[in-house]
Structure formats: C-alpha cells, structure tokens
Image (cartoon, rainbow, N blue to C red; front, side, top):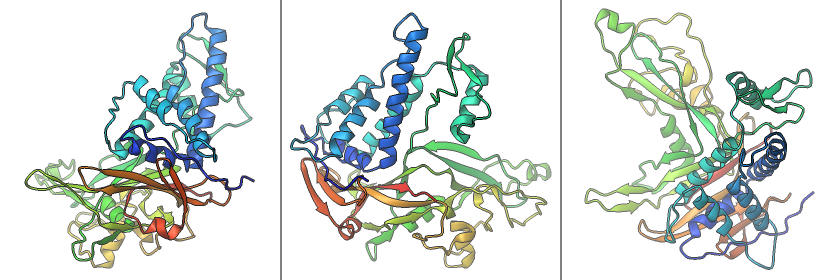
Length: 414
C-alpha cells in the first residue's frame, strides 16, 4: 500500500495561483490520475499501431495536454526537494489555442478549459469510425468488454484499426456527467421527451442568507433541481381543446460522474454595474449522497386531467403542484424525490461521494488569491493546504470551515 509521503508545491510565475489551485485539486483525485495514465497509454498504443498500418505520419497526434498534465500531477504527488512547475500544462493549452495571459484569471474557467481539451484530445487522436463501429464502441464504453465476442473495429475506408482483444477503447472523462431536463403539462400530464445535456461541473447559485450569512450545499442542490414554471409552451393535448396551460420543468442528474465538481456562483452584479463577491459560508459535508437528485425513469400509465400524481421522468416520481408551499411535506418530495428524508451524508446510498479537494478564493471580486485544500493520494488520505509553493498539513475541520469556491467529490465504491 502507498503511504502518505507528502506532496509538492507549484511555482507561481506571476498571477498563476488559479492554475496551481486547479492542478492541485485534480492531483488529489485518484480517478483523474488513473484516467490520465490509461489515456496516455491508449494514445501510445494508437501511435504505435497506426503508424505501422499507415505509411504517412500524422494520422494521429500526441495528446500534449494529457501527457503534460499526467507528468505534472505525478511530480506534485510526491515529496520532492524542488517544487513542480505548471509550465508544460500551460504550453499544452496554448498549443490548443487557449489564450492564458499572465494575469489573474478564474479557476473555474481554467477547469472548464482543461476538461474540454482533455476530452477533445482523447477522441481527436482516434480514427473516424463507420456508423456501425461507432455504435459498437459506444456499447463497449457503457457496458465494458466480454470474452464471448470480439467484433472487429474498422476505420472509414475499411482499414483495420483494432480488435476488442487489444482493448483500445477510450474511457469517458471522470468529471463528465449528464443532466436530464423535462417539461410536463400541469393540466393533462403531457410530457416532452427528456433532454440530455453533458456537463463537467455543476454551478450552483448561492441561496439568500441575509439573516444568518450561512447556507448549505443541500440548499444549493435543492434550488438547482427545484421545479420551474414555464409559460407559452404548446401542449399537444390541451391545444386540441384550445387551452394553453403552464408547464413545469425540472432538472435532475441522468448520469453522475466519478468526480463531481461543484462550483459556487459567488459573484453578483450591483445595480450600478459593480461586481460584488458573496463571502457567505456554505456548509458542506465530507461525505455526500446524491441518490435523491438522480433521474429515475417512470411510466405514466393513465394520465388524468388536472392530476399530476406520479408524473415520472425527470421528476423522480414525486408529486407536483405548480405553486408548492416551501414548508409542506409535499414540497420536500418535489425538491428531493421520494427519499427526501435521507441525510446528505447517509451511508445507505448508491451514489455516495467523499470530499477530496476544495478551492478557496481569498480576496474580493477585483483581486485575490486561490488556495487549495486537498487529500494526498496515499492510503491515509492526509489533508494539506497548498498555496503555490507553500504546503502544510491541514485538518478536516479546517477544510470544512472555509468558504469554498469549488468542491471536488470522488464517488466511492458501492
């Protein structure tokens, strides 16, 4: 087993604390490290295999960001006498035409640039499949390999690319999930098809906390998935009788990622045009359960007029009313589904996460400094505070007491 041996800081070459904060956070996610190792090996296999097949070079390209991010994280996750450098990662992003000036930027924006580029590299280095082969690959990514069959994958043009025995199959980025949204008529129960949308992080609005100045992650998640009344939507059924009722819209998670990244909207615009940072403390747990926010497919057997019992779909089978009272048990079902009473840190959960890193912004909306609290990837999972080259041990109570800007949760095995 790997013991905690400490971690290494990152050099700041000038207003680059946002870069170092994100890199340290990713370095604390074991699933990210494993994915980078697998993807780098995958790219090497493709280069070796396809250069032997194709006479021309350049059919595939080296995944510059994947390889540089992996080597940087490996340097971070071991205690060295010298600090690590983010230069290779920044150069890889610039290679992909990202403009990163030497001035203070937003950590969340950099995280989005990293994740979108990583996935772009992963699939752009692969050959173009035929439609039939694309379906096979998608099934393999979803369901994994079996020893019963080994269909042959070919590129467009009938060039033999690989067989399943070689297992050259890309894995989805651990931070990628799917959101499900659905519209349903509040009068007859007519539902539009579920709309799926990919995400790399979840941005949550800060709840109003003028009295106490304290809110919770649970409140933010509840607000994120709460029902929204939509007007001026055509109902295929009610329009036949000349009626135009309202629709209700709800967001849920169709697919939760292995690494759940949560971002808090802490900037707000003042009427005079000035941005203000909300410094309210949002409480968050070490262990997070997400079962109550997951899409559950239900079938509406016999919808009745003015009856929205068991509307199913993206509503988790909860009861729906257009204007619920926030204090009623009915509203709790709307917000959280049938398991609304389960604590956020419950042990009995299919979708249970453990906190592995947080990014904290110190300062105001105009300037400041990003620091990271993160676990080591060793067996003990020791917490550390990292601020560029400064690294010191930290305690969980200190981590949970800080006003987080971004949270990184890693899913636990069932």
